[in-house]
Image 1 (cartoon, one colour):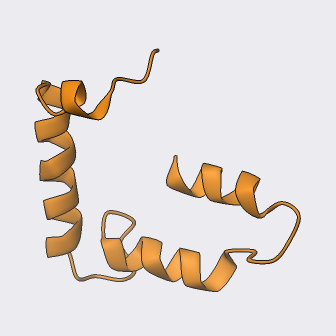
Image 2 (cartoon, rainbow, N blue to C red):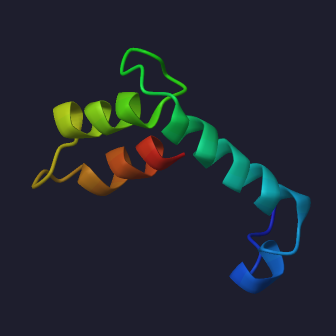
Image 3 (cartoon, helix red, strand yellow):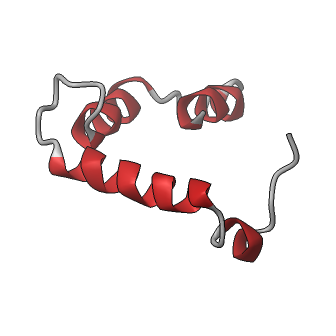
Length: 64
């Protein structure tokens, strides 16, 4: 799949879905729920290997 340029992506249905998904994650305040921003923020704070050789690979997987 080819990555779209930002201004092109913003005109697609996927953009609206992304915005909706982010809004739903922010509304969910349960830090134990994988569908919440708080859960993923805690994963990042607790496990992100800043300063290690595999930081970029870890972060790429985290963002995926």
